[in-house]
Length: 454
Picture 1: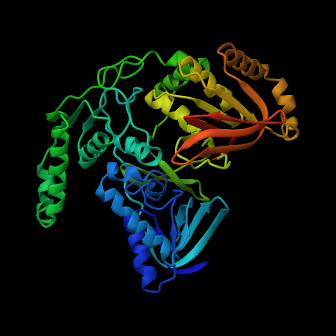
Picture 2: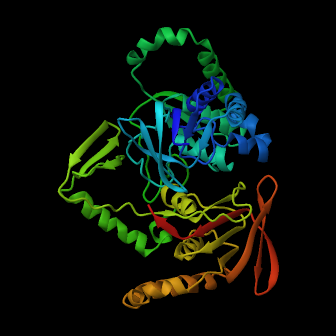
């Protein structure tokens, strides 16, 4: 499909509704979305929740459950759905340029609807970058997509309706928050929306219902909070939980990055955080979007240092709840000091497998096993000379292997026919090793298969 009547960017509630309406009117419609499933943030994973763990639909609320019908209508309509597709440019002729797992391409559209939703606004209070602090949106994403519920004393702080919604969802999921702290806000700017608010009394009743449910569960709601601070040394201690010193747990290489970041903070470079570069044109104008809007800078030279993306490992069962990538698990460990519990198996290939396993051992979460899948060593030989010139990498690898063996973590090399088995979530990992079939019970599987350039 290279020419369409309508291109919709975003498969959240608005994008889905637009696509359904257009398709029903006979318009040739295509929908691009970066996520693997339709629903957006509001209805994230609703099909999977309904199919794999339907008991969780009531926990997430009636509004979330209602999204299932919308997604099913979208699946049934004639719109061309393009998941995992990132739109990077719409030119003046309404050609929509995109990138998906199959490569890059474009479609020509007569009309375009941009329904890309919203970004959660960061709340930059003192201590907000400490491990043990995350946004409500991130916590809700984990709840919806992986059924992960926070443990210990959890406090929600800030403002906006998501605060009460997430708190009520956590109560229904059995994770009663220790408190909800609503920061002091200026009500006057909201008065211009008063007429529309009165015309939609359902929102008021929903809010009152959530407040009532939280009070019935004994969750303190404290309004008008000011001068909010999160206090801790290596992690937040006075709001969520006491955290041990995490720099040694994450390793010397990670800790060494602190000095690099401090040098960067002290240099004269103009730092633009939360800025997404969406185009570099032929004149080296760098076009970007940040919380202040869009803009561009003119550069004489450009260095692209966007790192790499973790490559998905699509073994049978990889989409089950209880399966995530090693990169995602390491991000949770670094950013929120979240350590997995139960029987954890790491599987795949690449150095991150051993690195994360050794970090988990230091954090007190010894993995049940590390399963290294069979790989072809010949393509790596072209890097042999560079590898010999950097013996430190070899010594680091041997050190991690030694630490894992000393901790009693089995490392099984040459594993093949890896399968993840379960009904509502992953329960067992099956594989062949040294000519024998094996199965092991698991609570969490962390997959990794190297990285690709971003």
